[in-house]
Image (tube, rainbow, N blue to C red):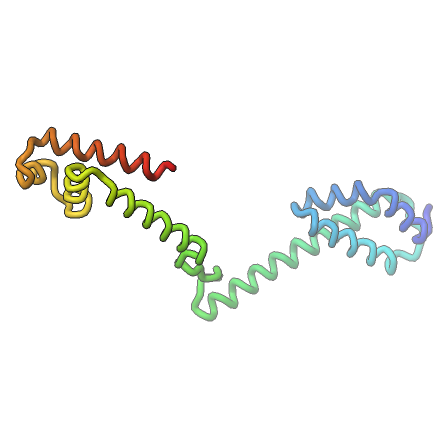
Length: 170
């Protein structure tokens, strides 16, 4: 049988094992480290009598600490969810749908690149592309307006798409 002061010595020698045990139970290394600290505090002020199997005692104490942490986490989630629902929310934090400043800047740059690429299209291809994409005209309507065949419209749009892909790829 081991006195409680000997238990702290066994704790020190089993610390890596106990840490792995708690990490497996809690799923987070940082949380497991917190649990180890809590276990140390409990042992330092805990058992006063001799302990027959210190290894089993430490593992059981570690399991109890892990269960306490899990219960506390669950109570917090329920409490916070109830508080949010009580105030008319769903329990989830509202998410701002607007993109961040960095995303807005990237989008502006991409839009400027696309506008420059469209402006640089060959004249006939650019005209057919704009009529189709911006004005929403079908190939047949474009052909009638420009006085060319439908096949000619398709070729102009294909040229425009190739040009835009190259311009935007760089």
